[in-house]
Length: 107
Image 1 (cartoon, rainbow, N blue to C red):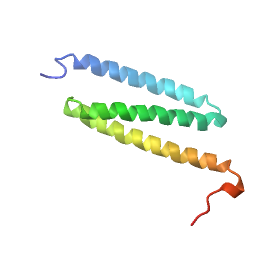
Image 2: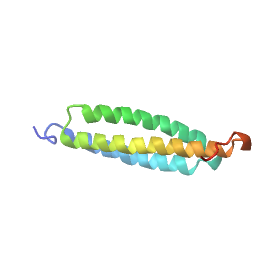
Image 3: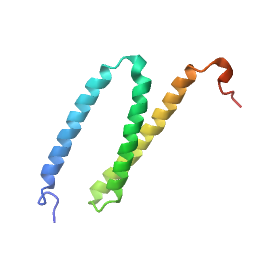
Image 4: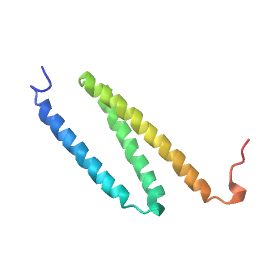
Protein backbone atom coordinates (compact mmCIF):
# COMPACT_ATOMS: atom_id res chain seq x y z
CA UNK A 1 0.00 0.00 0.00
CA UNK A 2 1.29 3.45 -0.82
CA UNK A 3 2.31 5.67 2.08
CA UNK A 4 0.15 8.58 0.87
CA UNK A 5 -2.89 6.33 0.59
CA UNK A 6 -2.43 5.15 4.18
CA UNK A 7 -2.62 8.69 5.54
CA UNK A 8 1.15 9.13 5.45
CA UNK A 9 0.81 12.48 3.70
CA UNK A 10 -0.90 13.96 6.75
CA UNK A 11 1.75 12.44 9.00
CA UNK A 12 4.51 13.93 6.84
CA UNK A 13 2.87 17.35 6.87
CA UNK A 14 2.51 17.31 10.67
CA UNK A 15 6.13 16.14 11.02
CA UNK A 16 7.40 18.96 8.81
CA UNK A 17 5.29 21.48 10.73
CA UNK A 18 6.79 20.29 14.03
CA UNK A 19 10.28 20.49 12.53
CA UNK A 20 9.77 24.08 11.39
CA UNK A 21 8.37 25.09 14.78
CA UNK A 22 11.24 23.35 16.61
CA UNK A 23 13.81 25.15 14.47
CA UNK A 24 12.16 28.52 15.10
CA UNK A 25 11.77 28.01 18.86
CA UNK A 26 15.30 26.59 19.19
CA UNK A 27 16.81 29.54 17.36
CA UNK A 28 14.89 32.03 19.48
CA UNK A 29 15.93 30.33 22.71
CA UNK A 30 19.60 29.91 21.85
CA UNK A 31 20.05 33.51 20.73
CA UNK A 32 18.76 34.74 24.10
CA UNK A 33 21.12 32.64 26.26
CA UNK A 34 24.01 34.55 27.86
CA UNK A 35 27.47 33.06 27.23
CA UNK A 36 27.93 32.10 30.91
CA UNK A 37 25.11 29.58 30.66
CA UNK A 38 26.29 27.77 27.53
CA UNK A 39 28.21 25.00 29.35
CA UNK A 40 25.32 23.90 31.61
CA UNK A 41 22.91 24.07 28.69
CA UNK A 42 25.27 22.04 26.54
CA UNK A 43 25.20 19.27 29.14
CA UNK A 44 21.41 19.29 28.95
CA UNK A 45 21.56 19.25 25.16
CA UNK A 46 23.83 16.20 25.33
CA UNK A 47 21.23 14.40 27.43
CA UNK A 48 18.51 15.31 24.94
CA UNK A 49 20.68 14.08 22.06
CA UNK A 50 21.14 10.82 23.94
CA UNK A 51 17.36 10.45 24.00
CA UNK A 52 17.33 11.25 20.28
CA UNK A 53 19.80 8.43 19.69
CA UNK A 54 17.54 5.95 21.48
CA UNK A 55 14.52 7.09 19.45
CA UNK A 56 16.46 6.99 16.19
CA UNK A 57 17.69 3.46 16.92
CA UNK A 58 14.11 2.32 17.49
CA UNK A 59 13.10 4.00 14.22
CA UNK A 60 15.99 2.46 12.29
CA UNK A 61 15.27 -1.11 13.43
CA UNK A 62 11.44 -0.92 13.25
CA UNK A 63 9.43 -2.21 10.33
CA UNK A 64 9.16 1.15 8.56
CA UNK A 65 9.64 1.87 4.86
CA UNK A 66 13.20 2.30 3.61
CA UNK A 67 13.01 6.09 3.85
CA UNK A 68 12.25 5.80 7.57
CA UNK A 69 15.23 3.51 8.08
CA UNK A 70 17.52 5.86 6.16
CA UNK A 71 16.31 8.87 8.13
CA UNK A 72 16.73 6.87 11.35
CA UNK A 73 20.33 6.08 10.43
CA UNK A 74 21.00 9.75 9.61
CA UNK A 75 19.48 10.77 12.95
CA UNK A 76 21.70 8.26 14.79
CA UNK A 77 24.79 9.60 13.03
CA UNK A 78 24.03 13.28 13.58
CA UNK A 79 22.95 12.86 17.21
CA UNK A 80 26.10 10.84 17.95
CA UNK A 81 28.28 13.57 16.43
CA UNK A 82 26.38 16.13 18.52
CA UNK A 83 26.86 14.18 21.76
CA UNK A 84 30.58 13.52 21.18
CA UNK A 85 31.25 17.11 20.09
CA UNK A 86 29.32 18.45 23.07
CA UNK A 87 31.33 16.38 25.51
CA UNK A 88 34.61 17.45 23.88
CA UNK A 89 33.69 21.14 24.08
CA UNK A 90 32.41 20.77 27.65
CA UNK A 91 35.65 19.03 28.67
CA UNK A 92 37.73 21.80 27.13
CA UNK A 93 35.68 24.51 28.84
CA UNK A 94 35.91 22.78 32.21
CA UNK A 95 39.67 22.39 31.66
CA UNK A 96 39.94 26.17 31.53
CA UNK A 97 38.75 26.32 35.14
CA UNK A 98 41.12 23.62 36.45
CA UNK A 99 44.04 24.71 38.59
CA UNK A 100 47.48 24.65 36.98
CA UNK A 101 48.67 21.75 39.14
CA UNK A 102 45.78 19.48 38.22
CA UNK A 103 45.94 19.99 34.42
CA UNK A 104 46.82 16.95 32.35
CA UNK A 105 50.34 17.00 31.02
CA UNK A 106 50.92 16.27 27.33
CA UNK A 107 52.89 13.10 26.71
